[in-house]
Image 1 (cartoon, helix red, strand yellow):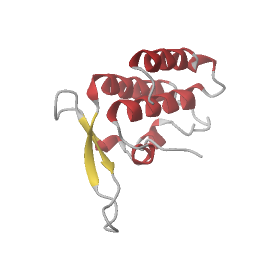
Image 2: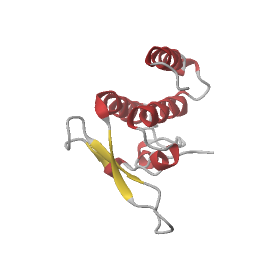
Image 3: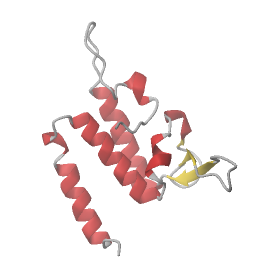
Image 4: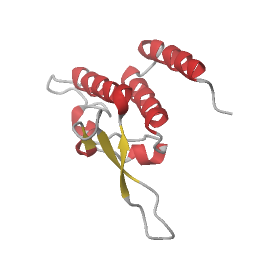
Length: 127
């Protein structure tokens, strides 16, 4: 049985509140956004891992859509499909993009982080 909406809100509130204390806050924020967008939009986690910034379409629909590469049918391979961002998902994606740009290294000689803007062009699952 899935958790109630209240329980899900409480859980995500506690999760978001703990992001600043994480050992790697930027990666913790990325994981939080991916978890919430997966819950909100109903896409599979594996589908969300392949989403690129160019796959986000803010205009179509009331809150925008994004393209995911879904499961194939009977061996035909994965097919692209659209998923809704909804208002909360759109806000989360803007928040994460802003965080990843704001915390990227800008001084010469600094090592680029895994989620800096050059690699943020693709929301990736790291294992």
